[in-house]
Image (cartoon, rainbow, N blue to C red; front, side, top):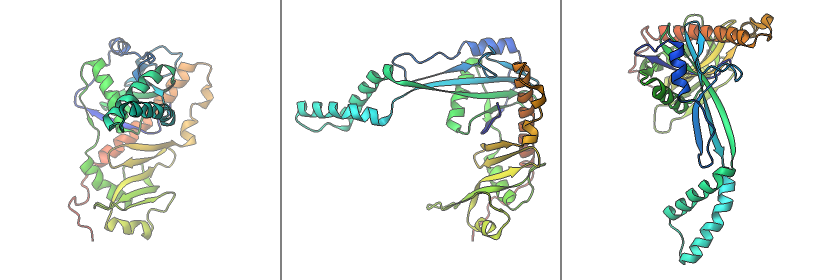
Length: 307
């Protein structure tokens, strides 16, 4: 339930909050397991809990959804072990080494033969639509995975005018300031982790973990490097890493926050999960809003010259 890595998308037009309509739209593309010859299958699943049969779960200011992905697992070692004898046999029959195209064709045929016997691996990715701020928050750190989920949502809803939630040009400028402990998002302090990369062909990279970022050995790297990831933290809320591509990663929630609903217990599963969802989404939204608002402020000179 507690999102660990997120990709956020701002919508240029609001989505429907007609829950029965959204429920029917998502159910049209519900998850079904892979058939014998399929390598991958995706579809909508139940976001709150598998026992709560809703594809679209209502939230205070929007709705929650989840996409399930199932893929067949065929280890490369298994494929290669069975592929090589086939290559050797065909090469002997042809009286010559096989071309790359021929080897690839044999490999594809072999994979189709092995798929029905392969094990399956499934994953569930949750997300929510916040109508108040008009954004989508998806619980994944991978941009490609998030785009796949957007594509499925777009197919189900008919359209999905999703855009990056922040201007990366502004974000890059502010990351430089944040590492210098300047103009941090409201309610945040500088964390202890950072990554910097030199903007040249070599791309020299330096990474600091559990380090005092105000120290000279860190600050000196700002002379010739760009900040690509930085840690921010709240006193008793959450800590996170902001990446230069707009991704929010390594989200950790203070125990005082995650423990707020403990007295509720788990007798009513839906009520407890709803309470945790409300607590998590409200804190995430506050953090995202603080970051987005700060990016509207003037940043460092975008044309900075490195010494």
